[in-house]
Length: 235
Figure 1 (cartoon, rainbow, N blue to C red):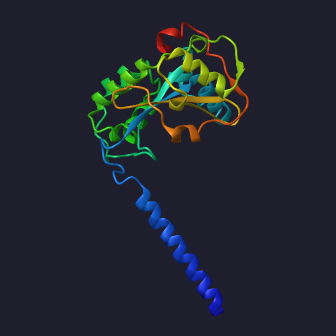
Figure 2 (figure 1 turned 90 degrees about the vertical axis):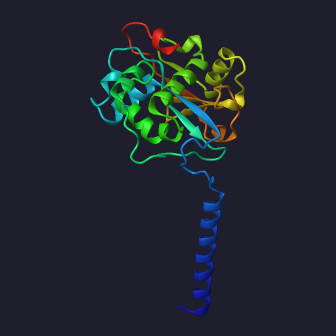
Figure 3 (figure 1 turned 180 degrees about the horizontal axis):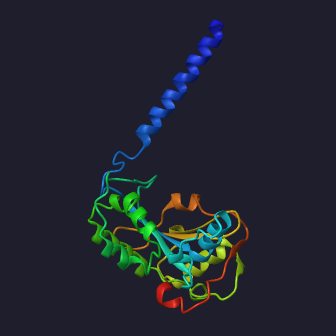
C-alpha cells in the first residue's frame, strides 16, 4: 500500500471513530435508566391489519387471542417511554416478574399474552414503576384517547389516506394537535396510530414521531372481523 493510500485509510478510520464518539455523546445521557424519560407514545394498532399481515407471512399462525372471532378494531400495542430524541428500552435485565393476574386484566386492551409480556420487558421496565402501576398507566393513556366512530366497527374494508385517519382522530379528541399524532403503515395497509402524551397523560407535540409517519398516498384498512360488538373493547 502506498503512503498516500495508508494516509487515506487512516483518515477514514479517524473520521468514523469521531463520528461514532459524537453519536455516543449525542445519545441521551439517561439512556435506559428506569423512570428517566420525557414523555410517552401510545401506540394503537389496527388489529385487522395485524391479523391479515400475519396470515400472509405465516398462514395459520395468527394468534387466536387477537385474530380469532372477537371483533377487535384499534387495540393497544404499547405505551412507550420516550426521549425528545430516541427512546429507552429493556431498562431492567432481567425484568421484574409479571404476575399472570395483571396479564389477564389487560387482555381487553392488549389481546395477546405474548405482547403484554414483551411490552413490559422492553418498554414497561423503563417507566420506573412496578408492573401493576405501569399497566394502570397503559389503561389511563388508552382512556384519554377516543376512537373516531367510523373506526369502531367498520363492516367493510376501505381505502384511506394517512391524513384522513389523522383528521378523524383530531376531530374526535379536542386538544389533540396534529403534532401529537401520526399514522404508520406497512407496504399497503394501515398499521398504527401513535399519539404522544406527557407524564400526566395530556396530549403533547413530538416532532420525531412525525418524521417516522407513513408517506404512502393510499392505504388499505381491512374490516373488523365479524362476531359480537367491537365497541365495548374499542372505545
